[in-house]
Length: 172
Figure 1 (cartoon, rainbow, N blue to C red):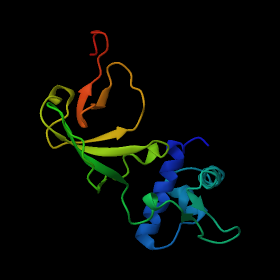
Figure 2: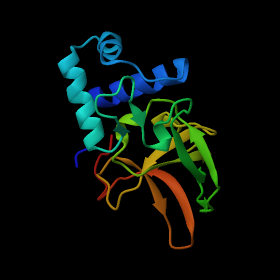
Figure 3: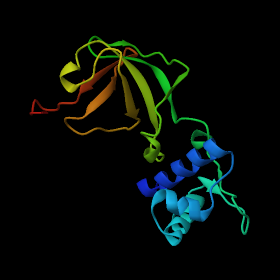
């Protein structure tokens, strides 16, 4: 199943915010007005969100939209696991920290990705705009492209944040 589109996720966020504010879900008219789209378009969004198991609705029931995924639940921000600290400089031991970081709505569009957060310790990534104390959002992947910023896990159980540069080619 493909991930939700940005417009579908915008509709989901609008429903979540409406429920948080009022305590009940919007009507189709309210949702259409709030999103600035037609009722048939709202129906398409809701069908797609149902197909992706992000919401459920009771057939023929008024105000029956329920958000099924806890990370999108009304009254909650979007949280990512904070897996620890990452060195921007000398590698540090890769130790998991059982915390979360609320990232608001910024990453709700990435529901299909395995994301986590790390807090940066050090100054070697300043030229990339990553400062000591910043949080980086990381997508867990097996491979990376030349020039991408990566979390490098080293054999001695240390990790560091670096720009991947293969074969001494320009990574800028």
